[in-house]
Amino acid sequence: MAENANPDDDTMLQHLVRISQALAGQLDFQAAIHAVAREVREILRYDHLDICLLSRNGETLLAYETGLHTSWGSLDEHMTYRSPIRTVLWGEVPYIVTPDATVDDRFLFEGAMNHPIFDARLRSRLHVPLRVQGAVIGALSCSTHEADVYTMEDVRAGQHVADLLAPYCFALRKAEQAKASAIVEAEARAREEGLRLGALRLTEELEHERQRIGMDLHDQVLADLTRLLHGVSRLREEPALTGAQLDPIAADLRASMQEIRRIIDDARPNVLQLFGFEHAVEDLLDRAARSGSFVTRLENTAGQALDEAPDPLKVALFRIVQEALNNAANHASASEIVVRLAEQEGRIVISITDDGVGYAARAPRRLGGIANMRTRAQLVGADFAIGAPPDGHGTQVTIAIHIPARLEAAQ
Image (cartoon, rainbow, N blue to C red; front, side, top):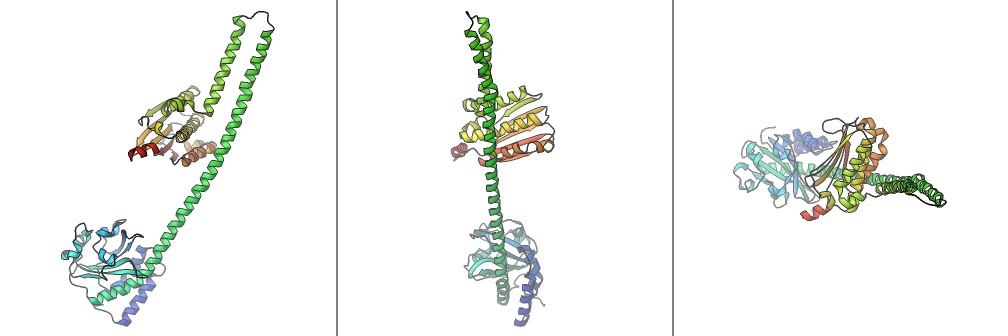
């Protein structure tokens, strides 16, 4: 077509039909504007063409462009009140047409997102609204380097194109919103099911733990007490008791008491409740070191931050650390195990790192324990990760969480 020529009604209709055909099957906004760019150029001159769409609340917008590419299209979102065409987007004017946007006060207000106008030398500009059921959902914009290009005939032609694009854009947006909602719902269902299964696993683990405690009491403590009772019964037959005869019984009593304390400590982390998180982890590391051929280390840069957490949260985090240490001690073949407590960006981060055979090598044997750690983390709202540490050797378990008490204090 000749420059700035306006097509007659029949020609206009033919171009609009071809625009409609070009739109068919386009599944996203960027593909749609690229698909219609050639036919729109037959109706309207442009060096830069874009469609901008308002968010649901109208406070932000996204731009999709063809021809010249500017920062309007490269931004994820920008605020509607900063848009040079905000009056069109707000429905205050039916259109904007200017012979030279670089000197037009409508585009030069304070805070305007107008840098592309000058960077790309966009002088003559035309903007018409995209409307669906009377509501403005966005705008179609055409711009050229040359000044004084667009006429009222071009405004009418642009509105025809916008009226054709608007319902398609509206449908695309609804489809994207529905897809996003479906994804969110599916993720929520998956999390709920994961937590349900995790809680079930924890319940089973608790039942196994109760059975283990019962067996420990029966097989060890009850057997020791029965042996002590028999020993005391035999002593009753002695005419006179001596210290040497009582010493073995006293030793057996001390051993039984230590065993009972061990069972109680395994069932309830007394050190955690009495002395705090750091000392409780140190106790775990000491016990692990005594039973293995590796060294242990605790690095704490978080101070007493974890002691401010609610008791159920502290116990859950402690149990995760306990499980991770047991895994490392029993299955990693490590020479060193390090626990780090740190505070990063308002969150408490706990990491348990070993230099052993690596997560992949031992994961099949400890899937249940890993699942329990992940479930405990989910139940208290903590992030959980397991994999190789930064140096690539061994395994690192990481738990990160905001501590409610510290959040309240910060507010």
